[in-house]
Length: 576
Ligand SMILES: *[C@@H]1O[C@H](CO)[C@@H](O)[C@H](O)[C@H]1NC(C)=O
Ligand SMILES: *[C@@H]1O[C@H](CO)[C@@H](O)[C@H](O)[C@H]1NC(C)=O
Ligand SMILES: *[C@@H]1O[C@H](CO)[C@@H](O)[C@H](O)[C@H]1NC(C)=O
Ligand SMILES: *[C@@H]1O[C@H](CO)[C@@H](O)[C@H](O)[C@H]1NC(C)=O
Ligand SMILES: *[C@@H]1O[C@H](CO)[C@@H](O)[C@H](O)[C@H]1NC(C)=O
Ligand SMILES: *[C@@H]1O[C@H](CO)[C@@H](O)[C@H](O)[C@H]1NC(C)=O
Ligand SMILES: *[C@@H]1O[C@H](CO)[C@@H](O)[C@H](O)[C@H]1NC(C)=O
Ligand SMILES: *[C@@H]1O[C@H](CO)[C@@H](O)[C@H](O)[C@H]1NC(C)=O
Ligand SMILES: *[C@@H]1O[C@H](CO)[C@@H](O)[C@H](O)[C@H]1NC(C)=O
Ligand SMILES: *[C@@H]1O[C@H](CO)[C@@H](O)[C@H](O)[C@H]1NC(C)=O
Ligand SMILES: [Cu+2]
Image (cartoon, rainbow, N blue to C red; front, side, top):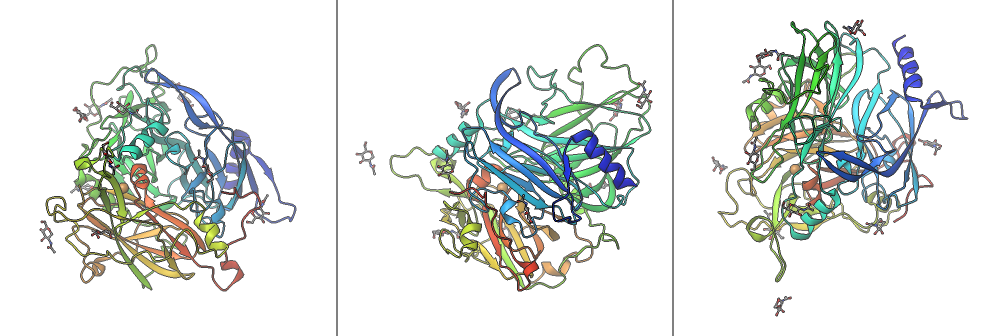
């Protein structure tokens, strides 16, 4: 009944075409057309050409049903290379449709078309899609919503589908910001505003008219689908006078818990229930500002929108003015205690219908540092990073260089060129990762530049311990794994202790997700069932850190059964 209703909703509102493949397979196919094109957009009184999908900013929402085959035809009508990533979609055997440039495909060139063809299997909830080429996801992003096959395990909300998508706006051209950063090796210019659904809100200059006003009705409960599509910033989010009940993260149901605010890292999604229960009614501020753990310049501004009860008389004649105060439940920007407490409450539902398949035993443990690096400046070169050097970032001292042809192609064609499968399985040099100040200690911070990935047999039960370093500054890095969800079995501050810490792992109901915010100056241990053959990018979802090389990947070899093999590449796969 419920899913029938959802299907009506889909066809009625989103005008997607519905067809059965000629093979009469039971899997319905949803078709979408995405055109990459420029669109003139004005925010903060700055008008500029923005890269968009179908002229929309944020981009169109994709809504499908669990189990659907999804075919998105991407046509590039801009003088830029591009690729699109379906962030969090498992892509079982369809790695060709994953999207990261030079990892699973070469970019779609100007005037070219590529069809992303994949099936959404055993996943439901909120994800996002975004460009995965240079910094294009600054404006090329949108919600990816999967309606469940079975009714959700929490009391059904009256009003489904309120996306709350955070982003960042630069007055300048984002390509120029990225190019300038890579040219001089300094930190990037920070954004001029954060946005909610593309709107910065009234706390920014010339921006009152660009404010999200979400109407609600008293007594009803809403499902907010919160997505952090910001480029470089983790965010806190709160709604004045309302609590939020977390029910799902990264398209996996959680044990529900009620909180005054949330912390959400780029690439993460969080579904919360909000009940409009306030007396008197009014316009309630919804606010997001960064969770800051870096000493380097950050956009420290606040974006707000309003939750407006439809019975209120406020704001009827005039657009909302800046409110006199921010929600008192919005954590302060350096509130690591809040971020930690919030993360500690996340638990898989681990029910009969939605079991938690965390590997109890592992076959391989990889320990990797994650952090910034510095590269000495060449003679006569101008470098604007710390101490007039160049900023880089690395994992186990490897700063990732993208190859000139996609790793997936090289792997599939057994070319064995352009990459190596010998990513170090432990830090090459042991030091007090979170203790010493390496600059003061004169530790060599020059990383090695390489394209080294990890390679594992099909079905490997893998543990990866992500260890933050104090190189330049400790920082909370959101690490994203493609093609697999993982289980966060342990987290802590300081240095991971391989003899002590595994004893404290949660192997019962650890949170399952695709992006983990690794504690600042600490570590996180994640476990993966490596059951998806292909090549999967692993990287920091702060885009500046990916640019600097905080990335690697893992190759899952095909298994013996045909159902365990990577499918052959589609015929329209873009060439390099
Ligand atoms: C989409 O992929 C499936 C395999 O997953 C394949 O059978 C089908 O032919 C593809 N469709 C198109 C239009 O390429
Ligand atoms: C970055 O900011 C500096 C200082 O405000 C400015 O001079 C420079 O033009 C900016 N760069 C870009 C690419 O916008
Ligand atoms: C919300 O709560 C604050 C205290 O945190 C209170 O001062 C305010 O009057 C309440 N109502 C509205 C509409 O914000
Ligand atoms: C952690 O969060 C819970 C629920 O929001 C709250 O009751 C508790 O006081 C918090 N603990 C700390 C130490 O902040
Ligand atoms: C944001 O950073 C700027 C520059 O460092 C500083 O002047 C300003 O006070 C900060 N604002 C807030 C709200 O912290
Ligand atoms: C608020 O919305 C509900 C549902 O659409 C409607 O029944 C009610 O009349 C609205 N109230 C006002 C004052 O507009
Ligand atoms: C650096 O610049 C000086 C002065 O222009 C020049 O003599 C020298 O050859 C340059 N060195 C290198 C390595 O390019
Ligand atoms: C690492 O450094 C921290 C801070 O200086 C210190 O407290 C800790 O004992 C050190 N750990 C080891 C193993 O040396
Ligand atoms: C990283 O690699 C470089 C080059 O091999 C080496 O000089 C440096 O000591 C290494 N640093 C660390 C922290 O492992
Ligand atoms: C676009 O991608 C192709 C294939 O990798 C590459 O040869 C070309 O240089 C790229 N163009 C730009 C402008 O980066
Ligand atoms: Cu990072």
